[in-house]
Structures are given as structure tokens and as C-alpha cells.
Image (cartoon, rainbow over all chains, first blue to last red; front, side, top):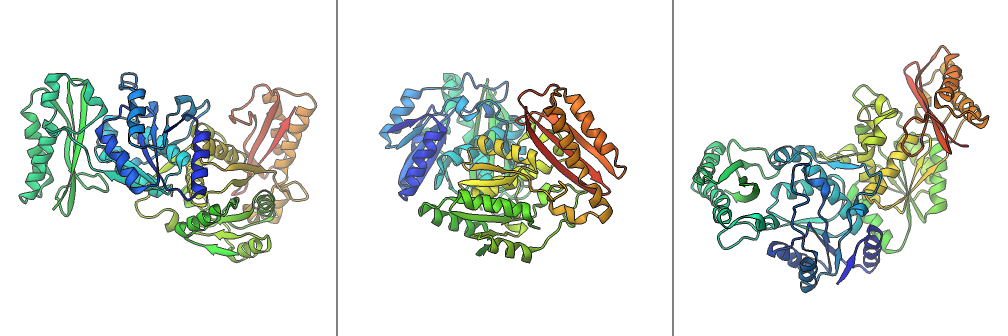
Length: 281
Length: 281
């Protein structure tokens, strides 16, 4: 496995592989890789000839009061995981390579960024859209693989790629979970043992929402109420949002028709957890 | 010459030519082509193996009170000019191909867009940055050629291409002028004979600013005053701005050091004219 740290060298690698007809798969990450990322890498290997994993803790997608400096970093373990999974290139640029002096361009996907995580984390999706546009321009992959855990992010990136004609197929891979249902996340390491015990309540709430739909429930408000009651039983957990939305627009549904995405975010102490379930009637 | 109307067909053409190692030059235009565009096409042919001219009157870069519906359109003459100049592809998509239902992504280059044309034409540069990002993603040229007449646009596009790692070399080609100095522009056809006679005053003002610098003048305010006096003599002409700026940041200069760009915009009746001169001390 090769580690590349500059955009120029990464573009040269990609250009050389394009000339050979190689289909490149890109897995963009912020490092602190876990089994969820491993599943994305395996999916990339299945659908492409060569795999690039980018590792960049993107300062632009953290708010001023967020955990950029505390975000978990373990570059050696990340490189070992990538090498073991047969990754061809680990693209790990320093921040000044991505945001050099004078940098000022921003990409935004305003409607999809407005609600939910966008409301809780102002500026977050602007940072995501901009860095993903850059990574796709640098790596020029045939496919880019994202986790479904960040459903709003995945929806926004699909829109962005289509709107700006960026080219790659966007693959959204199902969320990988612990045995008790907690969605894998690099931030889970921050949970105390007590908080960790409470954390699966988010997935339980989403499952109760899904069960309500499967039982014939169609009222968005009622499904939301069902989910909120589950989380409400845990005094350590505070709800940011728990809603049934249109999977394309992410607007809340008054009535569920064909499909809904149940989106949830809770806080346990200082830790935010997000998760979602896609439900087809 | 081939005319292509869909992004998908354009991307396929480019991909096929990339595989053959062909260097593509792109000349983005809004049509109503004149000798200034012809010079850009010739420059593209000199530096590239194949030339794509895009023809798209971009609604997103016109303000609600601007002249989108009145903008000159002459698609047959444009196609004839391109064919005569040896253009390989005329990429002329309909608006719904560029902005399909649900489109919402925008690109902005906020610092370079703030002043001058950005102030006079709110939203203009957002529309320019977004459509240029799309055209570059669709055509994937090795070089993109823009006219210096739109100096702020060219500066913004250079920044955008660098910031988003879009790849092509950006070539800025000197302004082509009428014998009396008036910069060629598709909008010049709107000038009445009387207005046409007055129009060269903008270039005369910029030349007087250049002469002041060449004579040792270094005060931004004094150079500005020199230029304003020239336009002030023409009662039909109203000044939007006439300034000496840093060519990289486009911020006004208190003192001219190595280089300045003299930027000007005037109104004659309902017609706006812009022009500029780059001056090295």
C-alpha cells in the first residue's frame, strides 16, 4: 500500500490509472477506522479495480464549539487496517494541502443541509460538501462509497454529485452495528461504560418506529411519538430529533406513503449519537 | 463539427478522447459570438489537440432585473463561426439539462465575488462559479480559455479551479477591441449610434489611468480621480466604478507597487460596459 500526502501526487496516480482503464473506488474517511469503515472498503473492492481510502479530519466540517481537537486520531492503526484490507492508496493530506493560503471557495447544497444535522451543526454540511467536491476532483473515482449511518450526508452527496456532474457512482452502504444495535462510530470511544449501556436506546427507538409503520401506522406525528417515548424512558438521553422523513428531500412526512427514513439524534452527556432506518411500506 | 446537447453524451465524448490521450481545450461562452470569442477559440486550438466550445446562456448568472430574456442569441451564426474555426464539439445544452428538477447545489468564491461586478450584480458570480464548475466537470478539459475583458470573472475562476482541484490550466486571453478601443462584447449590439460613439470613453479612462501610473503616479485615489475625470466629460456616461486594484485579491490599492489592474464599469443609457487594463510598474 502506498501513502500519498499531496493532491498533485494523488492526481498523478489517478491519471496514470485512468489511462490503464482502472476503475478507482474511493472511501472518504476521517480516520479512527472501525468495522464500519472496513465494510465500506470491502464494498469498494468488490465494485472497483483499485481502492483509495482518504483520511482527512476536515476542520471545515466542525463547528467552533465542536470536537475537532478531541476527535479520535490513530493514524498507525488506520494504515494497518487499510493495508490488511488490500487498499491500494491511503490518501492522507495535511490540512494546508487541502486548504492552502487564500482558499475561499465553498460548495453548498442548501435544501438538503437545512434541517436535522444542518440545524444542530451550522456550517457542518458546507464543510462536507466542499471537501467531498475536492476529494472527488483529486481522486476522480468511478465510485465513491459512504456509510448509511450518516444518511443526510449521503443524501446530500448524491445530490451534489448529480448537480455538479462530478461523475462517480455514489454507493451508500448499510450501517454496521454492535451486537446490541448501537451503530458503529468513531465517537463511540468517548462513551463511559454507563453511557455505553444507554446508547442502544436510539436504535431501539428507530426500530419501534419501523414496527409502527409495519403495523400499518402512517401518521408521521404518531410514529415520532412512538420513537420519542422509547428514548424518554432513559433519563441520561436527551433527544435532538426523532422524525419520519421523505428519503429524497428529508422533509418530515405528515403521512408515510411508499417509503420513509427514520432519522434520529440524541445526546448522552456531551456525546451526540445519530442513526437512521430506511423503511419501505 | 459535432453538436452535443446532453451532459451524458458530452462526458462520453470526453472520456473517449481522454483514453486516446487527446488534450481538450474548452471555451465557455454564452453565444452571440464575436471576434473576441474567435480569438479564444484560436488560442484553444494552439494549446490543445481538440476544442470544445460551450454555448449556454446561463440563467443563474442574470439577476431578476437583468437582461436574460433580451441577451442576444444567434445560434446559427455561432455554429457557423465554430465550424469555420475548426471547433470539434459545440456543446449547447438546454437549460433543463444543466439545471434539472431538484437542482440546488451552489459554488461560491466569496471574497473575489464581493466587490465590483459582484456588488453591482448580486448573485451573478454564484451563477458563474456554479456553471463553470459543472462545465469543467462535464468536459474535463486540460485547458479552459477565458477572456480578460471579464477580469474579475477570470480571477474568480482561477481561484475556483485551484481551490476545488478541478484540474485544467486556466488561460486568460487579452481583450479584443474595436479600432477605437471599445472592448468587444455581445451586448455592444444594444448601443444606439450615439451611445456607440460615447462608448470608447471607458477605455480612454483606463488608458489615462495607465498613463498616470507610467508617469510615476502611485496613489490609488489620484489614479481613480484621473480616470473619473475622463468619463465625467461625457454626459451620457454614468460611472459604476473606476478603480486601481490588486490583481490577485481585487481589493482597491492605496498605493500601486508592482502591478495594478484598472477596473471600470460605466452605464450608457440602459447598457452597462465593463473593461480593464493590467498595468505593471
